[in-house]
Amino acid sequence: MDIQWDGNTKEKFNQMINTKIPVFLRAIAQVKVSQKAESLAKNDNRSVVSEKDLVDALFIETPFGFHGPMKTDMKDLGIDYTQYGYEK
Image 1: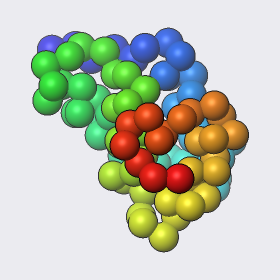
Image 2: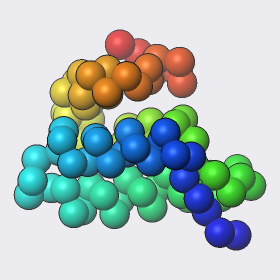
Image 3: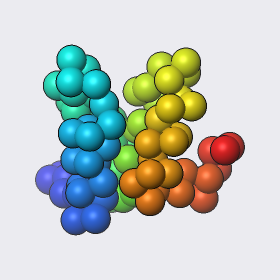
């Protein structure tokens, strides 16, 4: 199954990676988060990565100690992670 990204979700992913992730972690974060988001969509038998997949992938792939700053970064980009069951 060929996995695509919703346009708005891909834009938010790129903004998160390119403006919020430290330069020395960007390459690995881009690979890990994109692979996880695509895997989540595929496992749910969907061919399009949604914002929920992106949010889930960020929480899964980001070490717990960095969730606080990550939540702030998502909020700055207009991503409401609380609608997907994550606490403020």
